[in-house]
Length: 254
Image 1 (cartoon, helix red, strand yellow):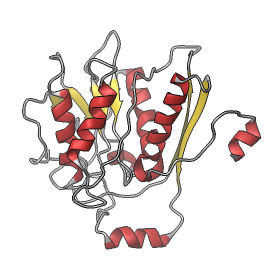
Image 2: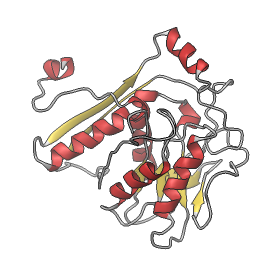
Image 3: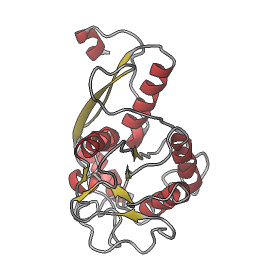
Image 4: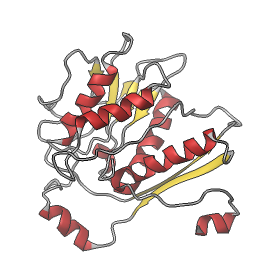
């Protein structure tokens, strides 16, 4: 509300709290408002500041944090995540005025009842990816939620495998990125940070390395899935024509 007041914005204005997927759920809402022509331009932002020591104590009690503070995404040593701070903001328009990244489709859902409140739910993740993919044929890369946990990484990759492995054959495998391995987990701002990374990847057709990746987690479902988890910078699987990437985000609220 303060931002809208200061720079004179009109139209829908609200904050979103969906835990670690907050900024991606905000993007979904902005995209839907553009489709409904409630507005012709939107501002989507996410911010995370680590201001209270008590939250670190709570996550330690849950054994959610990695002892070394590193997100070892897709690695067999995955043992929790590190926390970080970030801010990101993006403008979405119905009619971009330059050469911009285009959003082809978004989707959001909730796990409902699952093994526990914090446990990820594979079928729900598969469903939301499949819904988002209905508006595009294939993707050349995915920026994964990728917290680097023994439970979360295999469930997320399994959901991606069940959706993307059945898409048209590609000359190059799908690149799975993990920005959290580079900047740790910015929680409410994590998704907007991942999206900002994707914009740059599409611009330069280059995928940066996933850090702390020594040996791929053997629990990841990779059968029949042409995929790479780059441990060093590499080219995106398409050097000319339209390149497409997805961004995956999850949280307590789906």
